[in-house]
Amino acid sequence: GWCPLSPAATQTTQLLVEPPWTPAVLWDQVTLTCQGLGTRGATTWYKDGQHWGKEGLDHFVVTESGTYKCDRPGTGLSPSVSVLNDRLVLQVPAQALLEGDKVTLRCRV
Image 1: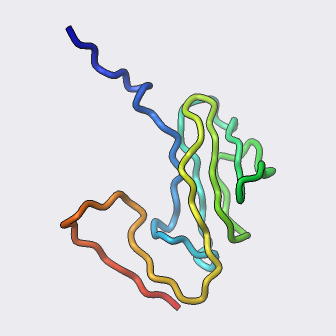
Image 2: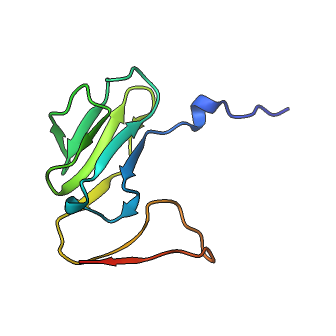
């Protein structure tokens, strides 16, 4: 016999970026939102690999460039998101892309 995966087994912590472009740039007033299982407000944030004091927040507006991750008790550590302070950036939509997909690029100054 076989046993299907439970929804909880496939859940992972996600770090959502708004506006949804990558790489994210500081001058876009980027909001990061941590989504995953566990108690709301139990999110732990990391910036540049170090524990970062945003306890109790599931989302916030980024004010410093760096590489961010979040951790939720039920689903663990998210993939990292970099927020740059570059003056010129080539961006793609912040979503999974497959070979052959049409994609809009943004060159921004």
